[in-house]
Image (cartoon, rainbow, N blue to C red; front, side):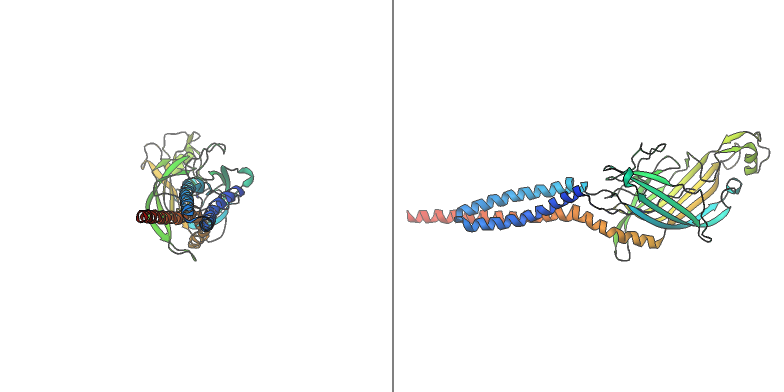
Length: 388
């Protein structure tokens, strides 16, 4: 059965190059302070009329430069700083149940009936295989019987993902045999209120996660954090490979045993490729600034096998896996993301606002000096007229 990845919080650790760019923005704010001091000094060291003109021109230039820098930062430089780090690491816990219905097919690998399961998910980046553009993340999922603690082998093999460090999308063509596209373990940073395509390894294609609404979740420290809710209502789709534990081929004898119909018109030794189908439904809560899936409120994969020709129903449900994120993990994701949300706000919100704030100060100074200079001209003109 398919066990999908849990949430993957990001930690935006800034590289040396990006530290330099960050300091450019902070220096831009400092320039505003220094420029103000310099202009005041000039105003005290030059004749009154000339100093007003100099400071006004100087202030006007600063307004233009700071506004341009703010726009450049918000829409060009700032977004370049938001990317997945080299040393990404996370673990999560989910709980649910696995139900095996067609025990004639699956009883050799998994016990028939319902089993409560505990899912331990670990995602770790591999810096040695990554570069500036892509991040390789290795994922290991351990599924246990919740009652006995026994590991249920074969439900999920270790896998690797290759993500674009800025868009968080899968990069196809890197992992042999799997050309993943769309998203898997997270949505893009600065997620939008729109549908996203989520990759499914068992289907070897994407399914759609539709935006539903906004909501708010609480951590232990962070309260009322805005999240976007996405819903997957998957279609009844044919699988590329069989579910874990299910055979890819079946003999005529096994088909007769599975269907309970010994009169099927097929030779006992004949092998037939089995067609499997899957339907996925899920509800995800995503923190939009970091793209982290902070809560998989529900995830359900239902598996079906195509019945023998002439049999009813056409497809028979053989298994179902359902799980949700542990509440403790949800709170931890919300709290751990506070630092990342603060960094993103500093980068895309407060640095541009600071630059625009200083531009406003300089604009006010330029307007003040303009009106003062205008009054001075009016006063000089009036004095010259009375003297004549």
